[in-house]
Image (tube, rainbow, N blue to C red; front, side, top):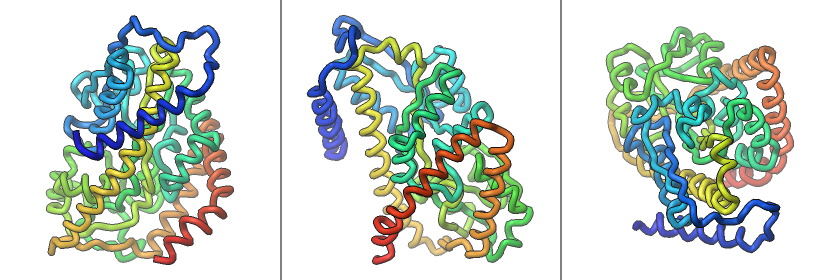
Length: 363
């Protein structure tokens, strides 16, 4: 076992031990049902062997198995092994599979407001978004929206701040956005369309070929680590930042409500603590991998790493406001979550200005 994984296990065990000191508030529910083994399946929206994102649920399952002494045994399946990536939500909702891992904006067609729990263009970064989800009312809204589908969601993992994408031409002004064929899903795609671009939906495995052959003019994916592994640096020369469309994407664990309620309190606590630990792990490992990958990309002679022009960012930010307001006018739940999100961000901004932003400005 690596040093990093050993430290992670120690971290989880310390959290669980701390929780064990709390008095029992579960009433008649037993703290432990040591005679029963729960054998569960967890399906993901990620390809097999996909770094970090597929690793996260696999490490989660391993730690839960260890901490529960085998009483909660979770077997993890990659996308396509049990169900396709975009059918995770339905499979867990129906109870065919106990758990799923993906990103809430994948289910925007079913729950448009779910997109706020993954990422929002020009929105909050990881620390701020997690504060809103866990302490600002976001999680309560999230669970309320998923309740009709018999799902219990948890924030588990992050991609960190993403990059703006790979382009086969320079973006020097707003005019260069007009008619741009770019792979960009979710709210980011709606914003791109508002700005005159042409958002295209293409699966991750097809991005390199589509960009290399000119089927699309540009694509976003994740960040330096995952983008380089996909070979996007061989298909396009211009790599833009910042990732305005996904300032930090929160990933989710979903559990079938009936299955969750069937667990005794101690196993529920183990799951909750493992979720928190995996979220922390994914954040720091993404920073590490992206740091190294960026250094490698900077040494490649064909790659130009460029900032978006200021007027382009101003235009995209204006279009973001329009896109969000349009969605809010169409869906009352979207409007409620949007108001909660914006209210928290407004209240958090003064502290962020004199803490995180002020420190970054000293660099």
